[in-house]
Amino acid sequence: MEDVDPATVLGPHDANLRQLEDAYPAATIAARGNVLRVSGTLNEYHEIRNIVNELVGIAQRTGVVSERDIRTVLSIRKTAKPPRPAAKSAEIPAAADGSLPLITTPEESGVIVYTHGGGAVRAKTANQRKIVESHAKNDIVFAIGPAGTGKTYTAVALAVKALKERQIKRIVLCRPAVEAGESLGFLPGDLKDKIDPYLRPLYDALEEMIDHDRLEIHLNKNIIEIVPLAYMRGRTLNNAFVILDEAQNATTTQMKMFLTRLGINSKAIITGDVTQTDLPKKTSSGLVEIPRILGKIKGIDFVYLDQSDVVRHKLIRDIIEAYDKYEEGLR
Image (cartoon, rainbow, N blue to C red; front, side, top):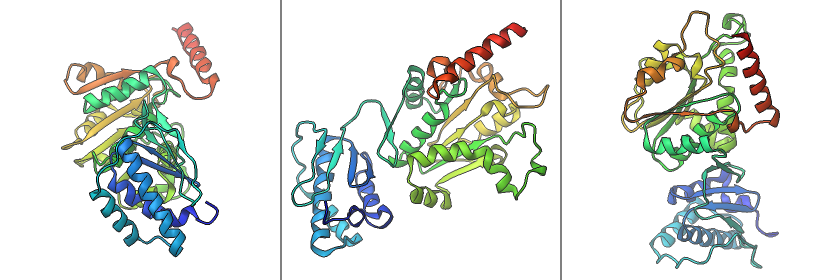
């Protein structure tokens, strides 16, 4: 690889890689340095490997790989006879001619999606797996549990997977902008500056799974939209994956408003922790009441997480248990 810059093969801002992803939407392709990680069938893996090797050859001969080059190679390869599946290979080392190496884990068990750095995002606990399984069977899923249980992260991973596989056309992520002790009017900056801190956890999850340039494009084109819950009023969301995070801070009226935004070919995951409501006193949480209202409707499911699902710092589980015991003592 000493005589071939991976950036030349992958194109400016990974443009050639994006064409590969478009040509093989069922496969997941992630670049890290001079390594590509490919998840998909063995046939897809071998086709992608051969295409990349041809692009490396072009780069060696001409010093550049144009969009026309990759369109030509894709056209030839997509019409060629598929290779016979070979035995699974954990790694293919760089060849003497400088071929771009690939690491593959075909149909890797439990992987939801790959981060832009090549890491696998998978459900790590039994109840996180229930979220994944429930999402496959239902259009609306409520994931309810304490902090640190991976509710939001799992939901965002499923949304990114659906977008990459073109199951939906857009992702809409929202949270209630509850003031939690501070008045928005007294916070510095314009409205965006005041609201962004409430939405930051959603940006954090997305930035792990989609590279910066790609994410900026999606945000600018509203393919991915991150908005306060109040901005959902009056909308109908078709062909969308919608996530309501921190739903314990949505009132009953807001919850109804959110759920009725769902349009054709859309899915929703609602996450929250009923023990951490920041709503004013005497204001009911829509998340607390929702199981009694919608619990028997087909196509809506509830997944409950607990301390055993905590995937943050090892002390988080102990903190949650200590608070549970303290609060029980106050009753």
